[in-house]
Amino acid sequence: MLSSFQGKLIRNEQNKKVICVEGNIASGKTTCLEYFRKTSNIEVLTEPVSKWQNVRGHNPLALMYQNPTRWGITLQTYIQLTMLDRHLSAISTPVRMMERSIFSAKYIFVENLFRSGKMPEVDYAVLSEWFDWITTNISIPVDLIVYLQTSPRICHERLNRRCREEEKIIPLEYLESIHQLYEDWLIKCTSFPIPAPVLVGDHPHLSMSLNTSRLGQKHI
Ligand code: DCP
Image (cartoon, rainbow, N blue to C red; front, side):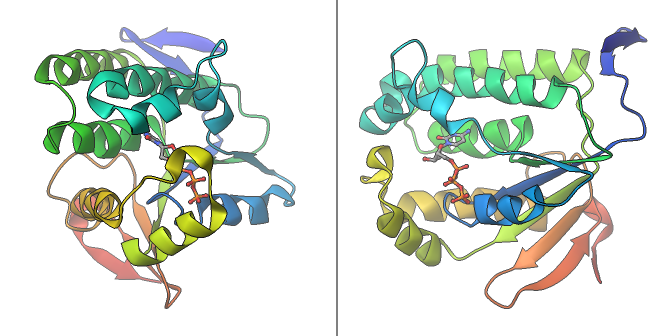
């Protein structure tokens, strides 16, 4: 249920914790989340990729990969809406784990399209206005970010193995750009605000360290 506090819309779920699992395409987020799906007291929300592949009979995900300059804003506007819907849905258990967030949609994917010259400046400006309005007027609580830090080369191998139709044309360089943006955001803390402490899963060594935003990293 939504209510208002000092003009900002908030969800009344104070005692519930939200964990966002972040990482490159094919970094293993779904596998990680599926592990927790069997655990009671944890609700798991994977990304609504099937919606991005079929909105009223259209496939904006495929269109974006075919022509990012034309369809990037179409896909990212819809992703922003579906992620907001996920963030605001009622939480049924003490802990919610969700795949990615409205923050990485903007700070990683929209940013990548714009910086690589594939998104016109006006599209970037409109998406940024939407994002700023949402995050100014609606409270989107995140308690922890789990970052699956995986080498782009490993992601590329997995991508080729799983053969999702829309993703067949993704080159290694695309995954390297996404990786760099994630590193700048969650490890170097040099690009955008980080909404919660970051737990880093350092693949393939599987060691974990806690990055308390700009306070430095603490090993646990
Ligand atoms: N995508 C995008 N823009 C976003 C979010 C996702 O273009 N803001 C694209 C990237 C992928 C597809 O959507 O082609 C699915 O994204 P994920 O990487 O999140 O899902 P995966 O199933 O690849 O994750 P994993 O293999 O780690 O479970």
